[in-house]
Length: 199
Image (tube, rainbow, N blue to C red; front, top):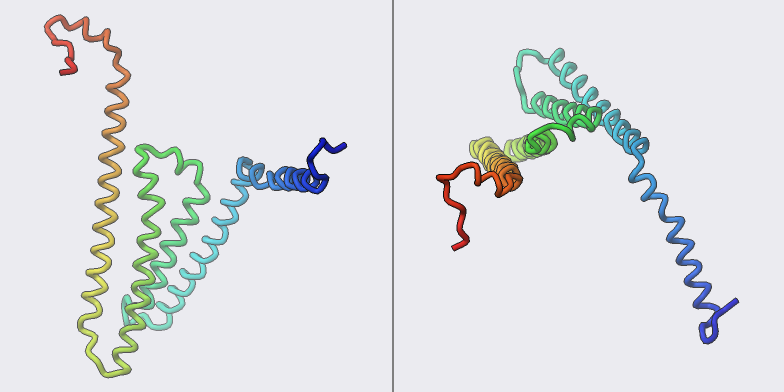
C-alpha cells in the first residue's frame, strides 16, 4: 500500500536502500567480533612470521656463502627485514597484551619502532642502488653513506621527540586526572592552607 502523493518508485527506492543498509551491517558485525579480530590478527602474524623467516633464511644463506665480507649492505637489509617483520609478528600474536601495556606511550613505541626500522631498511635499499648507480657512472660515492646516516638520524630524532612529548603529555594528563579527583573538602583538614582563589 502506497501513501497518497508518494510515487511508488520512491517507496521502492527507499525500501531497496533500507535493505542495502541492513545487508551492509555485516562489516559492523565483523568489526566488533573478538573472534574475527583474533583470526585477522593471527593471520597477519602468520604472514609477517613467514616474511621474517624468509629474511632470516636469506641472511643465513648469504652469511654461509660469503662469511669473509662481514656485514654487507645486503646482509643488513635482510637482518632489518627479519627484525621488522619479527617484531610485527610478535605484536600481532600478543595484541591484547600489547594493548594493556602501561604507560600508553610504551604501546606507541612498540607499534611505531618497526615502522622506523622499515624506513631504515628501505633507505638502505635506496643507498645500495645509489651506490651501484654512482659506481656504474664512475662518480664518487663518498657523500652517500653520510647522507643515509643523516637522514636516518633526523627521522629518529623527530620520532624520539614525538615519543618524549607523548610521554610527557600522558604523565601530565595522569597527574591532572589524579589531582582532579581530590575533593575540595580535603582542604578543610588543613586549617593553615589557603583556599584556592579564582582571582
